[in-house]
Length: 245
Image 1: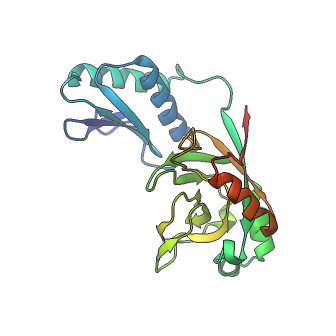
Image 2: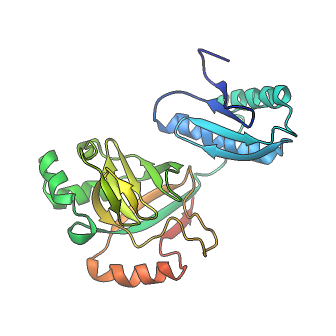
């Protein structure tokens, strides 16, 4: 399938990508998530894992047991069914309420980002906590959570010089997206806050907290609460509140 969507793109002999477009938008990403669920529940022979991204689903397979032609035909059928609305899940999924401490030592780029956007730091925080964000994908580092829904007034290019390391669980802005970091590592995103919530915890069940298709609302908390909640999170507690919708 070429030139039109959905289409397949082979990745060697051990993976197939199903593409629904080349833009970042909620409708395209929703189709990706619906296809991931359809593939997972179909128990297709040879399929090992599915990885949803912004606009495509990467299907990892065992080349020794998967029959490429049959699997490809099934993926094409399921993708078209998704586009036709045959696999829409009832309800709206999970809504997470995530506490964040903004600015200061927890968000050292807040003031500079506010100045670049012609806003006060307080106004940046106000605009950042207002939307309901969609988790588009999880990746780059374990649990790193990419979010759509940022207020356009906060859209800011990434830093010209990336930092070699930023704290885990940093809340940041890069271009038209916001994100929740996981483990410490390099980043060029603008750091505006930090959450005590750990997206990734190897000794917690579940290890990864957020999934593609979840929604997130940020709630500002004072710095005085951050240490206590972070200690609870480090011990394996889930300090983000989850609501099923």
